[in-house]
Structure formats: structure tokens, C-alpha cells
Amino acid sequence: MSIADNWRAVRSRVDAACDRAGRPRHEVTLVAVSKLHPASAVREAAAAGATDFGENYAQELAAKRADCGDVRWHFIGRLQRNKAKLVAGQVALVHAVDTVELAAELGKRAQGIQPILLAVNLGGEETKSGIDEANALSIARAIKPIANIRLDGLMTMPPPAEDPEASRPYFERLRTLRDQLAASIGPLPVLSMGMSGDFEVAIACGATHVRIGTAIFGARPQP
Ligand SMILES: *Cc1c(COP(=O)(O)O)cnc(C)c1O
Image 1 (cartoon, protein in one colour):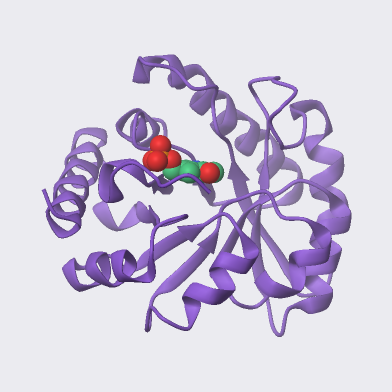
Image 2 (cartoon, protein in one colour):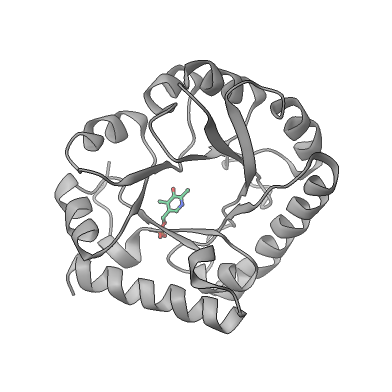
């Protein structure tokens, strides 16, 4: 299977999951996660119809942007504050903001409005980035007034599991948390959740952005 074939197969599965959930297909953005794959892989997926691409590393994003033509980029990785200048204003959405300070730095570096999401660590694993659920409201409140930053919603990454259904409780918790925050601070339309192994469950739970790498590009080369 080529990258183009894989992309079309994943796109059909995303569409079918939207149909089953009774959701319009345009509600779900398929972000093709191209981290560690070459620019040629991005171009191949784009030629097949992919429009949105996700990267995890600021320098890799900066290098690839020049070689991939007119596509929309998403920064989905953990971002260090000193790399914010490589990302701010260059991507449609920063998915994994985990501190008020990072949001402030992105706002300072952005030209115009930079949409962002808060990454929430629902798995409680020490190695994972993301804010604790208990701090979400105070952090969201602190981010709200930052100039040039628009907080659009939440992102999460459940602990890895073989069974896609194992992710369902995490996706449901993220949606509930989003609803609670939105009741206090206003609309948060975006839920970035679901990867190659569990995106259909995520769409059933209300995902608006699914981040899919392996199912489109195959196994990743080691960094
Ligand atoms: C790498 C990555 C993905 C893609 O994972 P796959 O299992 O390859 O689909 C999604 N989200 C984040 C945050 C990632 O780092």
C-alpha cells in the first residue's frame, strides 16, 4: 500500500466513523502526522488530498515547511518555550500547550492570532506532558486574556493500549472537562484526540481533530 492508498483508506474510515456517530464529516479534521518522515511523504499525501499535517519537533517543522508547498501545519508535540518562536504564527493550531508561560511566549511571538489547545494528562503517567485535570480551569482562565492567543479547546493522549476501547473513558473525560470549562469561560469547540489505534472511538466521543501517523505513513524511522 502506498501513502496515497493509506491516506484514502484512513479518510474513508474517518468518514464512516462520522456517519456512524451522526456527525457531519466536515466536523472532523484529519491531521496526518508526518513527524520523522521526509518532505516527499508529505507531498505524496497532499497529492492524494491530505490538507493538514502534524509535526512534533520545532526544527523539523521549520525545515519541512519550505519543502512541502501549500499545506496546513499543526504542532502536536511538547514545545519548549525557547522554541516557541519557530512555531508561533507558522501553524494553524498548537495542540499541546501545557503552561501559561508557553502560551504567553507564543502570544508574544505570533503575528496575528495563534489558536492553541491545552494538553491534558488524564492518564496520570509521570512521563507524559500535559496539565492535570484539577488545574485546567485556573490555567485556562490565566491563558484566556493573553494577547494574540485564542484558546480553542483541549487535547489528550491516553496511555498506549492494544484495545481501542481502552481509550474511550479518557476521551469521554476530556469531553466532559471541555464542557465544564466551556460553562465557565466560553466556547471551546476543539477536541484533539484519537491516533492510528483509536481514532474511530475518538470520533464517536466527539473528537474534532484526529492525529494519525502510522496508519498513513507506516512505521516511523527512529529519530
Ligand atoms: C506521533 C503522534 C501521533 C501519531 O501517532 P500514530 O499512532 O502514529 O498515529 C499523534 N499524536 C501525537 C501527540 C503524537 O506525538
